[in-house]
Image 1 (cartoon, rainbow, N blue to C red):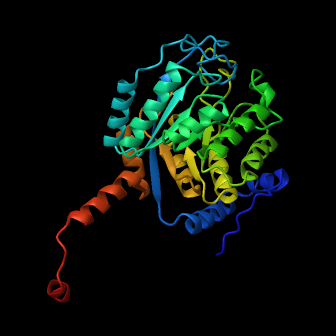
Image 2 (image 1 turned 90 degrees about the horizontal axis):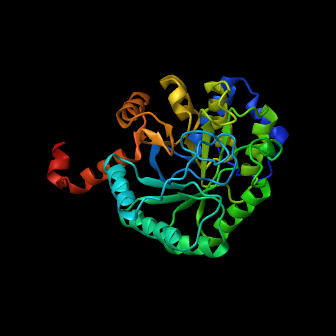
Image 3 (image 1 turned 135 degrees about the vertical axis):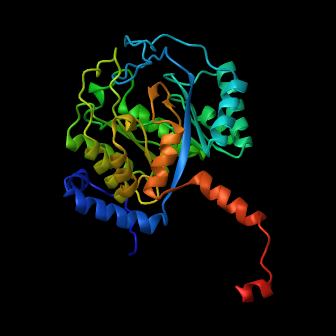
Length: 341
């Protein structure tokens, strides 16, 4: 099979993929995944909320918005640099090789908070881990300084389709999201950009959101696929839990559209069975967030995820590193030993 990387997908084509019989969709996604990303290797990423609550955006799904009445809406001071780096070291020891840090901001503040962010990025990179930041909108200068500090990726999700967007967020436009992504690209930092299902959107909305991602050139290097975690005190608290197989379909379609992107199985895993999560891995998900908390919502614990990957026959990135280290330190076989073997 020869992969054709496209950036001209239409919403109609993508909706047709989403509507395929599940077995057909999985077969196509699996074929693309095996060609583009040989082997079953899953990156483990850890996510920490560095600054929680007090956000000036009104995202209907978010517990950290000042417009919502959840317990987390109130402002909490930003964590200091060393405690954040300590958490990064713990994550690395547990097997994560990407450390993601979140700030509940509408936009990055210059001054001491931003300088601390740069120091955290440099510290995480100094441990040999990938560093990802999500902190709202940013300027060209801020994007450049983050790139100079060694930032691997900037997360800025689309959340939903352009058509459904103003039903979820009114304090920032969809176009402003795209402009932030363009600034990140110009600075030479990779993109982490995906969305959420289960927020009352239609199938066409899901296709439209994927169409925006799939027509970016290049595609986002990282595409998180989230299922809504309905938090009490938010406008979406009463939403029914998303259907897990719908998330499987989103993962599979994202893999077909963006063969070389890392598709991240993200929020909502706690409400999914192990079997549904394994289907997502089969459909082309090659990263999970690792650790018992995702910013402010729950996530399966580390041991449960290790068992999940083992049962699925999937090798995590930390296992690959250990295997390489083991091979590098073992005693070489001399020619006579090889002949005897």
